[in-house]
Image (cartoon, rainbow, N blue to C red):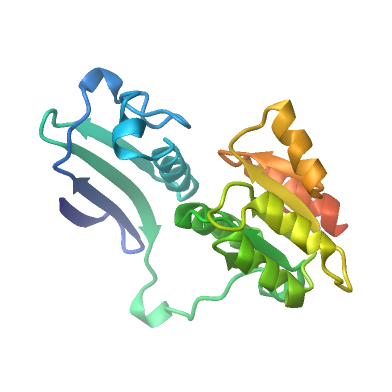
Length: 240
């Protein structure tokens, strides 16, 4: 694998960043490049059987790139691997005017609803926590159902986002255990599920979950549910 980073100054305060990563894997044919950024899509249907993966990584990565005002593209080097390119512009403060970073919604981070996110996929946890901070909210993170259960025992969470499919204690079982605990509060538990079929929804409700979000995550729906279950509805600009 080969990685390249370059930076070009356009003005005194704006810099264009470019990152390129070239792998030496099996490669992707040119006519399949337009599909690999779609959710649950892979260049070849045999890829999941041979190498694993769900087809969500590139979709989430592009979504993150767009949220940062950038782009994520791919170039085929078939059969000698693939090159992925991320480009974005960032604002650079001059040394004299540089100030310590401070989130504009610091008070909301301190006083907003307590949120727990349980997901075994590191990229999902990173993406969700990033989006919450963009709206002035903070969250605690759990990597499996057991960690979510232990956090719920002491956390006093208003909302728990619970991935359904996790190793060990999965989201359904963790939710049932939380509901059986003698907690002095009752958190809203919202399922994160890659299967939004009617039977799956019913299974979530039977486990004790209050609502659900299908993957890949619709963040506007996530914030709508945060407003609904925290009692602090937000407008489309994220203001409560």
